[in-house]
Image 1 (tube, rainbow, N blue to C red):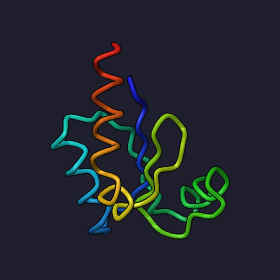
Image 2: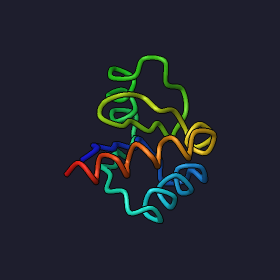
Image 3: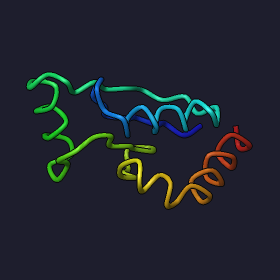
Image 4: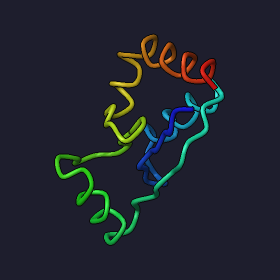
Length: 87
């Protein structure tokens, strides 16, 4: 099973789109709301180059934001399906 994490803010349109895409494809994910300064600082410690949200990680590896998710949609879906098939 692939572990998916999404750093988001509550008023972010692209965050909502990324979460909707994950839900549409049956992908379970852990959401980290970085709406507060403290939470955003925690994200920056883990992802020092991150300046925007969403930030999407699969098995601890940064995928990127919503645009990257859409750019690599097919390979990402293939990886998720393969992981689910493996158990």
